[in-house]
Amino acid sequence: MAGSVVSEAKRFIHFLRLCQDDDKDSWAYQENIKISKHDDEPLLSIIEGNQPFFICEKMPPEREPEGAESAEETSLNEEVSVKLEHLGIGPLPLSINTARKLLSWYTMSQNPNMAQLEGHVLHPLWVRCDMSDPAGTSWLGAETVYVGGKATAVKLYTVRSKGATADETSFMTMDQLKQEHQNRHHSSALVTKGWAEYNLFCLVKEESLVIDSQSRVTATFRWTNVEKMLESPPLSSVVTLQIKVTVGDIRSPMFQKFRELEFLLTLAEGLRTGEIEWLDLPETRSTVDLTRELIEGLENVANAVPGQNLKGSENQKSKTDSVLGFSSMLMERGDLDFTEQLWEKMRKSVTSYQDITDSLKLVIKAVRFGQIKPWVHRDSSSSLSRLIVQSYQQQVDTVPLTGLTPAIMLLELGLDKMRKDYINYLVGKELTTLNHLSYYLSTQVDLQEQVVRLKKLHHLLEILGTCCSFLSLPHERLFFFTQSCLQYYKTAPYNEEHVFEMQIKPALISHFYHTEQPTSWAVEVSSGQGSREVKTSWHLSDKPLVDHVPFDSGLPLEVSVSAESEKTAYFRTLVCCSLANFI
Image (cartoon, rainbow, N blue to C red; front, side):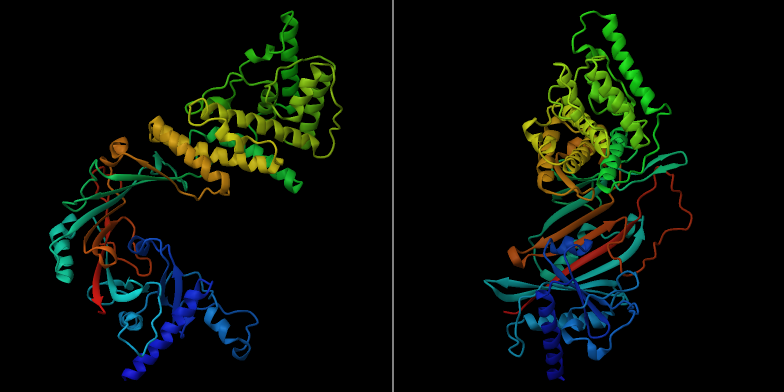
């Protein structure tokens, strides 16, 4: 019997070793066990940190492959490393007895006193459990403790989970949690640490309208010396803001600016693919009429004021809806030059390549024959700006407005204008310098890359818009945060899923978390030091931390969702650790 157990343990550990050295993510062991390599399972990430670990679970039903090969045609190596496809269902737990058997094999292999087994340094092992035991065990885990490269002990974890309840009298008390820890570890020197997370950016509800998006702002608090369950984080807490912003959120102060960017991105994509899907635009008048009106306006100004200098159009402040729409965040620009005013009119009315071509013909003709001598910014880099500057010396190059050239010229106008908008805010608000923006402002790269960099800059301003208008954070915090975001996007690809982090003082957001209940709250009791530190933790969360078993909420069927005094119903999770010494 003992020989059989050792043989099974050897086979299992050998398989884990193959998995650990393999590049794949999941494997099939025997017929009913799936083994995966993870580092992002929510609950286990809290316990294990960022290190990888193995997860064992029940094999999901396989999808019947088309033209499946026979067993003889499939190599042994493929059987070991194949990444299984399943039917789109969630993870499935194993029985408590199976979980204990797998962990016993793992523990035996790590014990240096087991001469029959060849020891290997392995990732921690966790097994999903079906909660069929009286304690409601949802996970069992094991992690080896090494001292000087030698296995000296193993930490055995037990996770017990319960459904949601708003009844705080059913919660474990601090004394009970400490006692739970001492029952296992018999230590009088206990350290308590608290952790809480608040959602600062909730759904906007207005009458029957519910606006949701993927944008999130959460605050994570960490502190020591916890005195009671669900206590509010003290002002001595360490607070980290996690900010994830999806562009195009109607709640954003940058929403109107996003609409402008949206047209620019559509134009750039059309140039890349050769076909543009024109957006529904707000202006009903034709592009040609609007362009002609702009030209005639400049002619009238020049004719009305003899000796009009080249900056005559500077006084014509273009208070377009895009500027007014985000003026609560961005400083209103009163220095739109001629090409920027032209972009504003065209982006709201263009519906075809022909619209662009006809409008640019009008402008170039008026410039070439001296009907207008509009002012443009000295640092403007667009082709049209260069033609206007040439007209000051009556030397205007011939531009064949054929093929994609008109669309390219319009894209250049938009890039020029939007870059100056962003400079106006970031530099004007003293959040950065032109030198730090050089990567984003460069015109030495091709137009498509310029568009990508502008898109990154817009994402940054969406994030800053949330920090300014919603959180009202002080300038000092925003300054350092801006530098870190700018540095991140110099090397990273555009990614709206990225979570930006910022350290702040609790007092800056006290008005949020003192009036709200946390979405997650946890406390841990620990003793010991270094690799032999052991912890017992209690977690409360508005969503279950375990996703492989269903939970009864324990809530009454009729609950008023509008009651201001309603308490959050929390799922409860207890994580216990035992230390088994080998030496």
